[in-house]
Length: 311
Image (tube, rainbow, N blue to C red; front, side, top):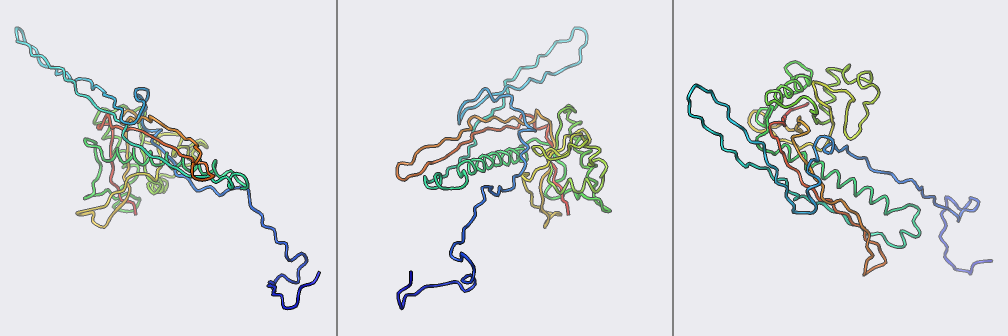
């Protein structure tokens, strides 16, 4: 078969001399590069005691606080005074919600070499969990009545150089602060950024070693070590709220460190659903999901927010 005179054909000079030079197959891998995921810690450091008492967005749970009774001196024939019982209560409200939605074309489902819907759904579920984690940690740091260590005007300089505060001493101070508030020693936790644990490892490498962790030191929901340090379970997170220095700390910034007890914060997820519906205007499936939750600091005295500066 020949070509007509004057016909224009474009050839790549780099491949015209090769055998079968016009058949260049492309191979698509069935393995998809999955984005890195941050560890979520809030499900491990908060309680879900009131999860069963909510069902939908806008629900509230009224939690009655234990009354505080006055104890007074008694003398013979003294007139007694009584403590009035108060109905002070805390309100856990389901007022947080996040959603996702994406579309999958029929051609993508039929001819694609990978399951796009499954891959995208997995990524969306992670994004919802990450948003939940960030939101709860921010609520802890913003709660009123919590104890503090350092401030935006006088941040604690943490490190192992001269004049800096040893990370172990940071843990000890936060533990002492909880002790002063009579917080139980069981079920205490602390959440810090990776830079803090880097300094902790440099200062006290034996405490962070494989021997101390008994081989279980890998990240599991942000858990850093299988053992405890200064009475705390250690968690690592990149979702901690940031602070910006003022006053004597102008020009500094960093991440808060949060220590507390399991009873300090309650979370409740009212709805976590994913559904697929058929588009009425195209040959596509619409995949969407919704996460609804509430969070409440129930015991601010069982939280310590640290403002630390790590070079």
